[in-house]
Amino acid sequence: MIEEKIPLVEEILENWKPAIGESFEGYKNHVYRMIHFCFAIRDCSKEEKQKVIIAACFHDLGLFTDKTVDYLPPSIVLAKKYLQENGLTGWTDEIELMIDMHHKITAYTDSRYPLVEVFRQGDLVDFSLGLVKFTVSSNYVDLVK
View 1 (spheres, rainbow, N blue to C red):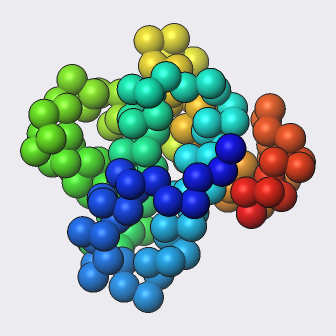
View 2: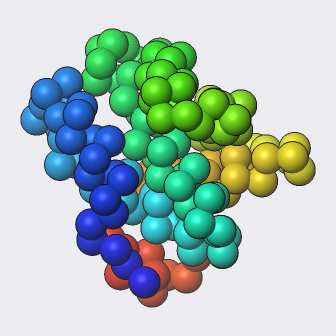
View 3: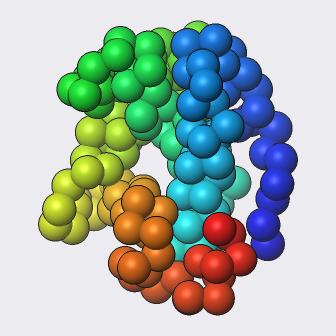
C-alpha cells in the first residue's frame, strides 16, 4: 500500500521547510519513496516503521541545514535532538547508524540492528532510480515513482 500522506513525515519535515527551501518537495518525495521501499523490503512492526520514518526525514537534512556535502554528521545531530525532545533516546544508536550507514556500498551485517541494512537498501533503490531493487519488484518501484 502506498501512503501519500504519512502524518509523522509531514510533521517533521514541515519544521524544516524554510531550511530546505526550493528543494522541499523533491526531498519530501525522496523521503516518501525510500520509506515505501524500506517497508517493501521488510514487513516492519509499528515501532520499526516509526524508526524508518524518523531516520528518513533526517537522513539528508544536514545537506540543507549546514550547506555541506559532508552532511551525515549534522543530519545525525538533528535526528538525535529530535529523539531527545520526543522521549525516544532509546532509539538513538539505531537511528544514528541508519543515517550514518545509508551510503555504505556493502551490506551492513550487525544483526542487532536489521533496520540499518533495510534503510541502506531502501535509499539505494530510490537513488538508483530502481536499477538496484533488492527484493522490491519492478512493478512496485514504478508504482512508488
